[in-house]
Length: 65
Image 1 (tube, rainbow, N blue to C red):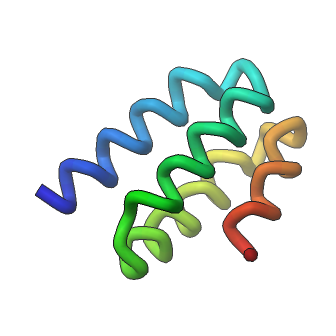
Image 2: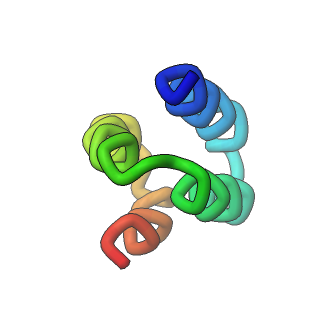
């Protein structure tokens, strides 16, 4: 089930990526719910996903906390 939560989180983040505010809120929720090793996987995915989306770079600060 843990893997399913990570995949669900990715799906949600893709859907709300049009708005940096929504993206940050959903990312905050995900960081509270996911296990530490899933957060590491999500961080790797985020770096790839936001590579060409500079408006979402602000949200990357949440992961580094």
